[in-house]
Image (cartoon, rainbow, N blue to C red; front, side, top):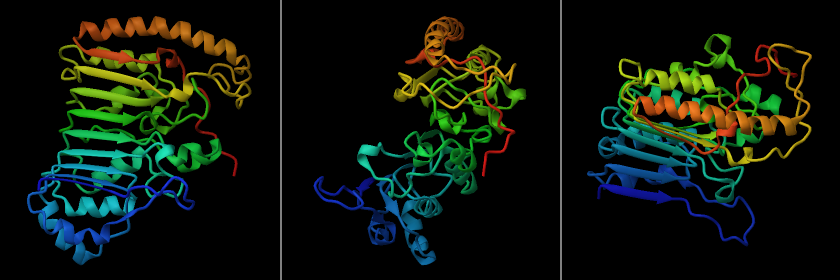
Length: 327
């Protein structure tokens, strides 16, 4: 057997309790030990930690895995599975947090964010060999926390430049841009300081990419995308990039809250966005204008480009990351 899919299943809808079963990976050792030809492994709902002897028993067969797909899997289980894999052989990695309708708040792995996953992959030596990386953490429980809690608990990844072999990337926006609790607001964090304004993607992405997908966008700087398009021209740092897809967060389709927290404009700290209906309408108009310019820029480089919510283009970072959140 070369392909193995194992999942936790779910409780019957009428039952109460956690709402989902977890796979104890300590009990999968015997299964893995009988699959010497395993190449493609998917685990949904993995939890717990392997003992050293169990890692030793799994390694001979997981050593040959080239495709690893983890969903709702705890950080501990992820680390142990990666420890059993051979970094030189693992070429395709996928991590997904399922939608809330398919999990519960206590499910393992539902509070991890993209920066942490990238850090783990780097620690275990697979970052430089991966050809395909898919990280969907847009359903992370961390994003349901309050604004100040997010600032304390959340980090964005500094860069993916060290993923030198990567050809195909699909990643949640919250790994690149600090998440805002309100649509059409692009917040500044340590990785999107003034010196990188309009240059975040250029500094973030690895050079050898052939396709890029960013999902769950809530806002994006138009200069960020324009600078990327410019670098896809012959001689640019992303001349291998041939497909770019942006997908907006469906929650940004409408402004549900009419009284969000005050957001000071960058040039005048006393000037605040108070008329959010006007902001919404302005975003739609300017977004369509920006979309046309971006399409032409990518087309000139022969790059296929698409964005399902161009109204999420936002022409400035707002808020001050340097201010410490209230305790």
